[in-house]
Length: 101
Image: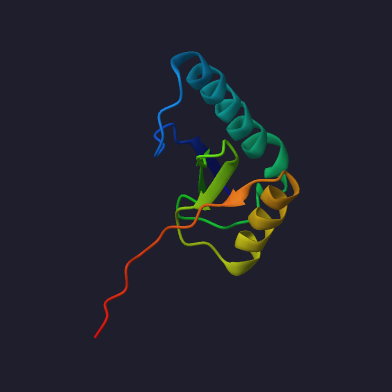
């Protein structure tokens, strides 16, 4: 299994330049740690098709949020949610407007 964690620097808010550098460095470090340490138990599990891709970013209150961006089995999704939850990361929810009939 290949695990890819990508930091997403685009946010809904614009931090000051000096704060943005610190935040981006922190996000890159968190992505590396997730990929190499926290998700290392997933390597070699036989799951395929560009395996697991996780995006991490910030909420407007500077908390890290995560989102799995490809289809994965439920046990992998649960594993990611459990690990990210332990680290205090929030699920990155996307709001989709539903059609009202």
